[in-house]
Length: 156
Length: 118
Image (cartoon, rainbow over all chains, first blue to last red; front, side):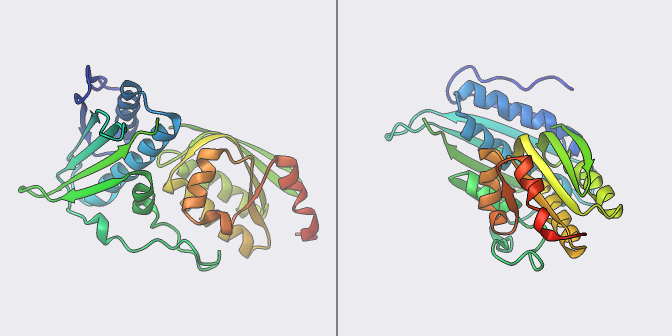
């Protein structure tokens, strides 16, 4: 295990961690998510949702974004947003990579209803991400790659 | 990010007791453990999810692939004691309509009684 991510000291501060985009980096990345959840006082449900969304996104970057390419960086930032006018705080997760650009909103719709014989194996990752967060924004930075931003409002 | 798999072959049902997370780092181990059973024609499988608090799409792929293999050979993969966070993921993924879930391992094992001889 490499050095831990930086902990946020106050609302709005971020946890920032950068690792090679390899499966071995996943525990460190998910640990950073746990740390941000601790700092934000996130509920078990929020923690579960953020971990799931982050795992799906990171695995997509590692296995698709950098497929057939040397593993470049996977850069993760987590920021706590103080409560809005409705009293809901949020965690904003930004994942940046320099791999092949993708378009999460163009992912084929998931197969949720076929019988077992016809049910497609796979294709659920982006669907689950979308179910776990309120906002999902994707942009291609000027130099290429991907910057994906997820926002989950924290349940009291 | 770790998963312990404890296999008990209790003819005619094989129970796999899982402890940990069924995720991108562990799903391959689970698939391997399940495949070994199917290759040995032990196709009546129960996965005990009592101590699994987390699964991701990688785990779902393993469950569906195994379910298909088992059913094509006259068996099934059935789940026992699925905890609420995992149940939610199964539900959101449309898996509750194809997987048979039971409240405990005994009920899951007993559910195979009416399948006749494998």
